[in-house]
Amino acid sequence: MTKEGRGIVMRVPLEGGGRLVVELTADEASALGDALKTAVS
Image (cartoon, rainbow, N blue to C red; front, side, top):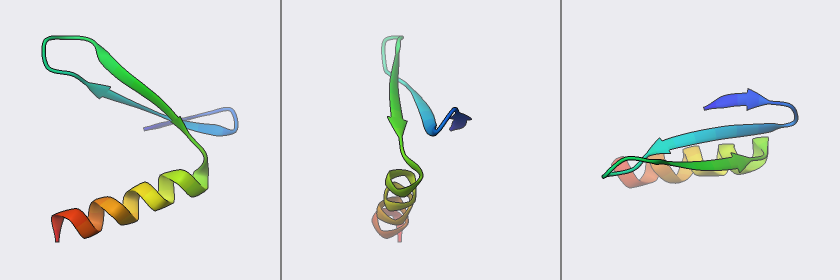
């Protein structure tokens, strides 16, 4: 993830090439982090 302006941009490589680009607010990024922690524990 990289911080760009007021948002955080996440670039996710996709199978077969290409990339999914998602722009998040700080609150959304925090919620995503919490969700990922829950999923992998």
